[in-house]
Length: 362
Ligand SMILES: Cc1ncc(COP(=O)(O)O)c(C=O)c1O
Image: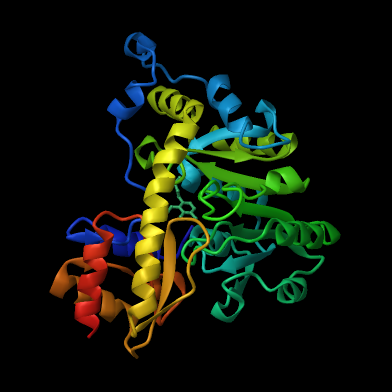
């Protein structure tokens, strides 16, 4: 199967590790095993390193089920990160010729994998003029009775927009009228800056809603490589059929520490919200005085999309910036958003990095 280059991963692979200030990151300072050991009984040290429970331990699934209002263990399967979860959903649902609508900008999996399967993919672009929220009328016009799958990402990477719960319900109604599956990538769920940190989840509001979650962002454990899918039981069964060919089980260490982390998610949330709010406030102050940048401030997640008020290709801008200053940003071109750059506002040394960008811009 031929597939397009994953442009964000390609760029990060090349430039992230050499950055002095890494603002390409979407993670909130990752936790260590030592952090988690404070919560974990020592039983893991004596556990044989077998494959573990094939679709994930009941302990872990039980903790994940608590993140939803309408979900039991049979509605969950554990995956190799959200990246593995998304892939399994596409593998299980899509065939050549299927119609898919994907709301962009988003994680590239959501259009490039369907395209690689030979699906007809329509891209529905979020607009700055609409605060990066979906336009419901445009969505109604984009889907048809032939659409099989709608893909969205909420809170959104890269814009940081959070779709209000009421609008999520409207989207679910449109999907229901047209009998469409909805893949809702919710890896930043739990990181809304205002109101309830958790938006409603698609798996809870719509029978054909598929929610993808992960330990990587909200829970600061990208190194565990644990994600999950929450959906109705028959789809989870189909997904597990595919999953047997590419996962067997996640590591029992990952499964164990993910369940420990979720059991202590209030502690993680308190720690992460401090970092999130501090980063947001630094970003807000900076965008207010920086004349060469326009930014709709994020409402959640860990990233913001900045419009460059200079007519310069985003890749050239990011390359020149990093070469001159060591600050790494992600070019909009890698997310089909030329003229913009993505900034991770939970990055370390954010203030210093932003001052450095301003000096470069001026
Ligand atoms: C929207 C989105 N989905 C999925 C992923 C993959 O996450 P994971 O680390 O859980 O595989 C990312 C990672 O940046 C992401 O931003």
